[in-house]
Image (cartoon, rainbow, N blue to C red; front, top):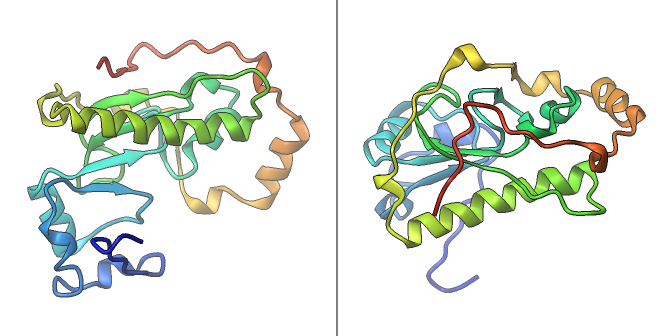
Length: 189
């Protein structure tokens, strides 16, 4: 790692147990981005909201919220709902104001796994580009419309039986037609 980078390894769920003194170096940032964290509570969520922290949600919110959203979009045979949502961090799970959505490009030969992982790259690349252009906090925000929610999932919903069922279907992502939902808010750079 470069000399200006430090790491702090935490077990899943332990972020809420960290004190301000343990995170002091990280709390001196210009921009805060949350990705892949468990539910943040207490003083830290208040701090991050005050600092206008962004969240990368792997799923197109408000359609798919919770965990493993891109898996569930494919499970529901809705590949058009695979992607990421960049939104403002809030105290509610995946319900902050939406800045934009990112979607993967379907490339010839892609598997379902390739396609969903490309959405991670799209989210990171688009977010970096918007930050580098100093546009991130100038983007118009859109409220989450919970009436459009298709599925809200928890980690417990993603189990061996569900995965086995999905794999036995042997879905060929190449046969999919991608048509984005009406509420979809793409990023125009």
